[in-house]
Length: 115
Image: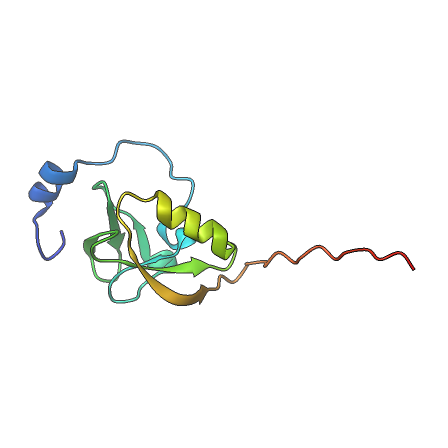
């Protein structure tokens, strides 16, 4: 099912369909959530460009107009800010950090002091 504003045919006409290929990162790995807050394995890239599919809602959502983002735990604030700045449309960003079960947070290098 398409989003609440357009049918599948209208989405295909306006945005086009994604070509084949394997995405490097899934939407949740980049911090995306559907408008109702579903994330992780519940969201995936839609067949339509600029859209995310929510398996729970069974709807396509535009990544910037509808979805929210939260900084993934594996990204520094500077990396996340750079990613947001690179997007054609700025999505709504939620405060906080989205933690993943296997996330390792890089530690700062400790400076060695000569005694």
